Amino acid sequence: MALITCQDVSFAYEGNIAVSGLNFTVRNGDYLCIVGENGSGKSTLIKGLLRLMSPKQGNILMGDGLKPNEIGYLPQQTAAQRDFPASVYEVVLSGRLGSRGIFPFYSHEDKKIAGENIQKLGIDSLKHRCYRELSGGQQQRVLLARALCSTRKILLLDEPVAGLDPVATDELYRLIELINKETGLTIVMVSHDVKSAVMYASHMLHLHTTQVFYGTAKEYLNSETGKAFLGGAQND
Image (cartoon, rainbow, N blue to C red):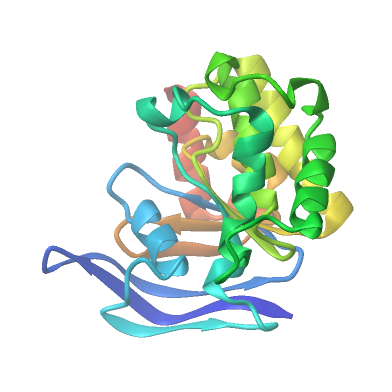
């Protein structure tokens, strides 16, 4: 079943078209990776999927009863966020805020879901640690657990491995793949690491201020766009 469908969508930023010609569908269980050079429109598209920006033209359709506040989101971290003075448990539990509505206190169900995701991400031993004392890889696991608390359907990840060392990068990629395969949770991930993207993703969306390619990872590997981009990535 389709969760998100973009039909002839374009977005404008400060009066100028940032990205256009978007026609693709994200289905239940997909692992879609969005790639492209800096300024190609990747982050703009993510903001649009989160309903933080409205399309200048076209339609974004949500299926399977999906609501914007049911999308788990892992943004790029800022320096201020890395120094956040809260416990791991408090950070993860805050992922339930979007489901609280008018109720000011966390429910037993909220706490149960937070605990389950802490275990799922293998950070139970860090539960009472201060978030800002953790390594970059540990922090990303905490933020991923927090994002999982917001959804049972789809995760949007914006450069989740940015700034991580190779070991932590590989661990996080494998963890995201495991979540996708074992739980069936749909993944939409922005990445500059196209070589890893085609290894883990089921589908690829390549942007260059317009939609250049959309299809399966296998199709991308055999496409002229994929060959050209992967060749450039291999020569970096």
